[in-house]
Each structure stands twice: as C-alpha cells, then as structure tokens.
Image (cartoon, rainbow, N blue to C red; front, side, top):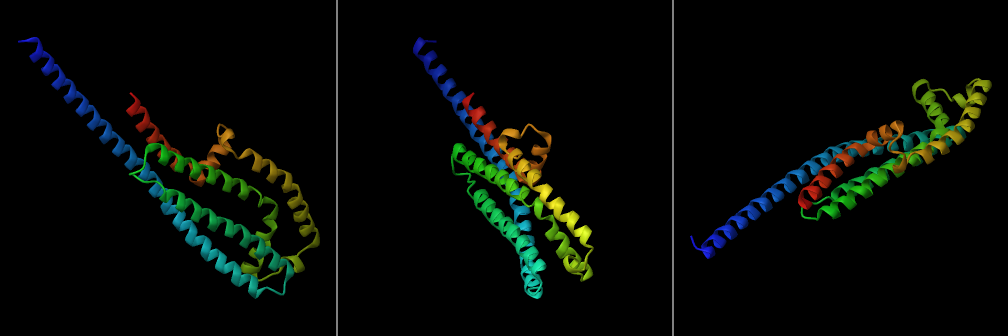
Length: 220
C-alpha cells in the first residue's frame, strides 16, 4: 500500500471518528437539554397551580375586606395579607416568564443565564416572605373571623392580644436576621438550602446541572 493511500485511509478514518464524536455530542446535548426542560416543566406546573390559588385567595381577601370594611383591625389585616398575596402573584408570573425563556434553540450559556436569573428571583422572593413574620397576627384575626365569626381584636382577652403584639415586635429582629441569612452564599447551611429547594430551587439546580454536563462533555 502506497503512502498516499495510507494517508487517505487514515484521513477518512479520522473524519469518521470526528463525525461520530460530533453526533454523540449533539445527541448527548439534546438529551441533557430535554432533562433540563423536564425539570422546568415540573416547576412551571406548580407555579401555575400556586398562581391560581393565589388569585383565588386574593379575591377572597378582597371580598373579606369589603364585608368587614367597618372594622379597622380586620381591614388592616386583610390589606396586609393582600399585599403579600400580590407579591406571590407577581413572583409566580415572573418565574413563569423566566421559565419560558428556556429554549432548545438557544445556546447553553443563554439558558444558563435564564436559570441563574430564575434562581436569584426565587431567593429574593424567599427573603421578602421572611419579612411577613411580624404580621402573623393578621392571620389570626382573619382566621377567627372566618371560622368563628369573632372579631378577636375587639372581643378577645386584652392580655392575650398584648402578648401577641409583643411577640410581633420580637419577631422583627428575627425576620431581619432571616432575611439576611437567605442568600446564595449561605446555601451550605442546611435550613437555607431546604428553604430554597422547597421554593423551587431544587428543580432549577437540576436543570442547571444538566446544562453544565453539556458544557463539560463538549469541552472534553
């Protein structure tokens, strides 16, 4: 066999290997992209459920506020809860928008950026939710009115109400401390990680993991 013929055979063999490698990388990339999309689809489903529930709750609170508009304590309580429910609605809509930005046709880095934004938004929302701790009394006031038809603020034991007001004040530093602790830099703390994961961060992390595997595989 002549040297030129041998070189041609080696060249053809190398092209075949390269073609096979490119095909495997493409197939692997598509598979991992599908896994990422599946994780986000699961998150999208629950965000839609939460959005529907939040809208229903908001409508109920609006009706409750109107029906009890003559009671200052119940009006303020309903308004406080409505504010936090509005935040929940905005949060769900924003996350659904971010999830929709994930696209097979986009580059891995672009999809990663969308996932980072989604994870950041989840953490930010959790921090805001921590600030509602001092307002737990609003839930109690509305609960008594809904389930027992009692305005506990005007009819309840004054010492009990005072104790709850003091507890609300004591919750302020706890709320601020929790707000500061919930961040990406504290993800190594178990309770912070559990909060983020339960809020959807786990699904985002899974999607990010699959995208990272694509980048690592292509770089090999």
